[in-house]
Image 1 (cartoon, rainbow, N blue to C red):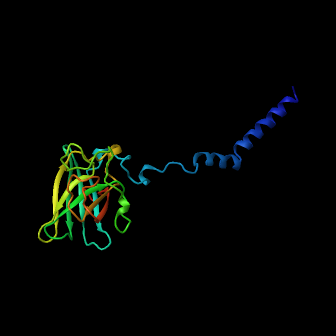
Image 2 (spheres, rainbow, N blue to C red):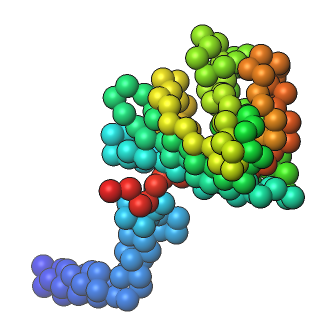
Image 3 (spheres, rainbow, N blue to C red):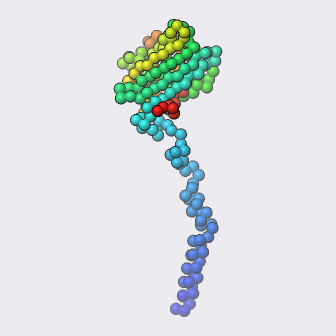
Length: 207
């Protein structure tokens, strides 16, 4: 019995030393701060998946001219109980003219001719049509009509566009075309070249 007590005491001392050693503390720190751990919510950029539809009331697309064009403007999308209000103000168009006005599938306006924006946004594989057609691309917004000084303004309610879920228009792009959309030719209404393009983003300046 006299030989067991010193052995037990020595084992207890060894356990305390190991528990308090710097190596153990480093191991614990590494376990609580693994590389690639999730960022705090406040540090992550907002996306459609992060935000419920009711938390964002407006998206905005700032239109920039393509190469050789002078067309610019803004398109604001406002989420309401009866649909999405689409309000456009576009300048630099030929006077008294009609121009195809669409949402395209990619939020990429980097190409000189805006071809990087892809085709019309068409998540349900429908035929091209007018905004009020039973079957249409989600991105079919019809035509913008300019006045005598080349400015086009419109504000319409669209019942197809969505702010949330997998059909959200956030991160897509708006494109203004050189010609009128005939609202029937496939796949894009024969609306011609792209005069301006803008990515749809959350309107950080909304009240």
